Image (cartoon, rainbow, N blue to C red; front, side, top):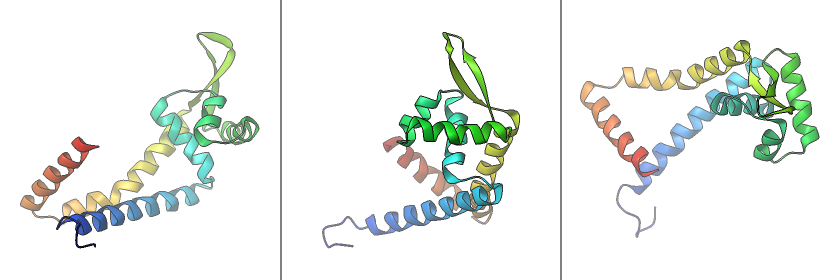
Length: 143
């Protein structure tokens, strides 16, 4: 911490670093156990939040070639985690969507990623939970 830093800056930085590290660690552990690569799993997460998109969207978002995106997508389709469907606005374009198995896998990943947070919250006193919730509301509002 530098002398010009506000008094709580270092504590906040450390807290954010630890939370990010733990969250990422749990995410990586789940992805490895699933047998997928991080890029493959990133596609599943992208579709979880976007609901549907094309291969070109995946290519652009991940900053990879269309050919590389197509290969990743094909493996996920073969694994039964993604499906291709016609775009209702342009039948020449295929939209990608999670299958129910793909959605289940993403939901399991999110649950595993946050399980440690739930355990942490359970170990807090009610007053501490309230303080944490208030602090997080402040942070979220500023993002």
